[in-house]
Image 1 (cartoon, chains in turn purple, orange):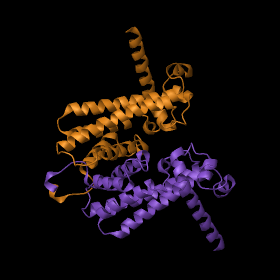
Image 2 (cartoon, helix red, strand yellow):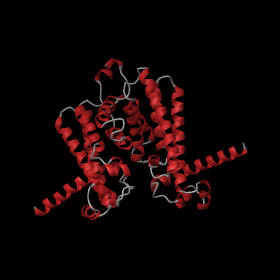
Image 3 (cartoon, helix red, strand yellow):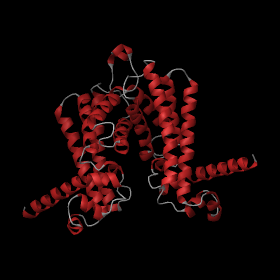
Image 4 (cartoon, chains in turn orange, brown):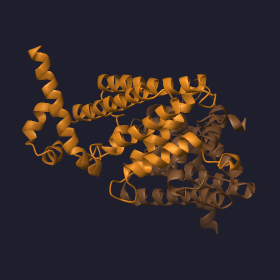
Length: 201
Length: 201
């Protein structure tokens, strides 16, 4: 029990460090940011940073895990929240963008994990697959309930996640849009599509 | 004139080499593929490959340029083809996926140009911006014609391009889907949205 609570304190500290370093990671990019710069951004000595992350790979890995855990929480919360899959999807879209674009988000880093060593990459992909399954589950339920258009739920999820994840590539905090605007727009467009239907308005 | 036709012959040969090497680039990744492996895939000696591309950066750069030129041709063709912006968009969606997922496409490479030296990166970004302007022009026209839903055309373009470009990350030729299936699905979903509207069917 003691070991576990020490572990969870260490994890909490790791999350705190990554949240503080998010701005620097976003600005410098994953490959560009050195451990020294990351330590500085988080207000730590380099030695102290190495206590929590043995190397850059481990730091990138934890970044992915923290983000994916937050996305999983968003998906589960959305599914509990409402019986309408349309509302669930809307909540998921907004939550996904808040997690990946918000002030603690490390931006494009969310997608840039291809360079991780195989064992770490495998764990990231497993968690990502779990999130994708949650998303697909909402889509499948929505189709069954005739709330969503029938089709290949896997391809539907790719359209949804592609549009959402793309935002981490173009979004720049404080320039042009805020997260709420992007979330409201993307929610409407993904649910309603691009075509204007006279009969519905 | 003579110089220009020599230049265009060189460019044609470059395109031919990149098309032949597409499979290897897709399999090995941009960073993973060495010039030697690329030469092999294209049926050239390494020396001959270096005649056409001074280094890997130049090769990656040409890959981007060839793809973006093809996408620009798709957009222009779509705009000439029809007076309905809905049909134009549909054609653009299918054409974009054919270009980026087709047998000559180098897959995720399409998005992976962040490491290019600044002068090459700048040219790629200029051409990419030109393509995005073509896409936005269709969206703006469609809104004016009341064929598309009113909204921020820049954000609309991001939803569209995000979903389309995402496919280069997950699509694997010969496994699960063919390009035509993905194109038909994405065309319908992006235009019509996820929600099923009883009144319209």
